[in-house]
Amino acid sequence: MEKVSLGPRPYMTPMPTVIVGATIGGKPNFMTVAWAGVACMNPPMVAIAINKMRYTEKGILENKSFSVNIPAAKNAVEVDYCGIVSGNKADKSKVFKTFYGKLKTAPLIDDFPVNIECEVRHTLDLGSHNLHVGEVIDVHVAKECMTGGVPDTKKIDPLVFSGSDYCHIGKVISKAFSVGKGFKK
Amino acid sequence: MEKVSLGPRPYMTPMPTVIVGATIGGKPNFMTVAWAGVACMNPPMVAIAINKMRYTEKGILENKSFSVNIPAAKNAVEVDYCGIVSGNKADKSKVFKTFYGKLKTAPLIDDFPVNIECEVRHTLDLGSHNLHVGEVIDVHVAKECMTGGVPDTKKIDPLVFSGSDYCHIGKVISKAFSVGKGFKK
Image (cartoon, rainbow over all chains, first blue to last red; front, top):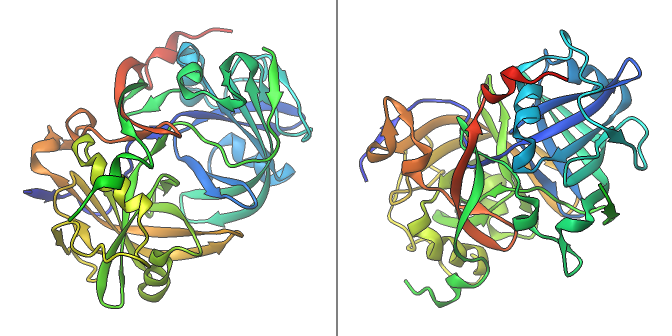
């Protein structure tokens, strides 16, 4: 396959689109993040990469906690707003109806189908960004998005970030841990 | 919104599906990974979470390098195979036609639209998994997947992992860094 070399750059596709919540100066703040993923099974951990200049950084460093809130497609406007407008310039504490779980400094977005409470275990200073690794303390899922006791991705209808657009999850290609069973080389 | 608490568990949606390449005992090996994302802009870095029991771990720790290969939908069978079958039990060195870029211990999959070469900068022992943070040395993209000098996600047609299925990226909900501009609370 003919390839072109792009040189060193941060690249991944697809990416999630989540809103990270933190408490700064006693108020909740929210920022949109695509650089997020699971980091460990046991104990359960997630990692988020945050530009060190961002307002949210202060709260994560101060309280050693954050939330990861997974939006539905219908939340795309608020999600985009929280990515465009900085907490340095606007008070985003009232954009969402919030609630709290076990951590009193990790504000959770009521209207989003999934909320993950995290306690910071590691912060890696990588350069422009800090990579925060948080232990998951609890996961809250909308009752209407559960099927047979587990979160149902179809019902959650999360945002896939293509790099330029927010998209739905599309058609199924194949079942995981299944279609490869017959593969022979 | 009525929510149920699931307790501590690793959760994120959506996730990518990539194949991590490494060299073990002088041979390339490949494993499927969904816990991967960008970790830093400058210098460019990606992070991957690998179970410490996995065969691939040996190669990453030994050579301090790995590759992240982004498959197209048409590669789903091989992708699933590399997630089901361990390098401990099967020789996966011949599953793909491979090539090398700048790093001679990060095997790249010729038939996949995107290949990322990474040099390990940090390895965080988190418990069941090591989180490897790799600096991106180069990104190779299929010429046919470029539009106007940048990688075109539509042409790449990567796999979105829903938790149980590999899916296409679906319909566009809205343009990022745009639809939120008009938001007022």
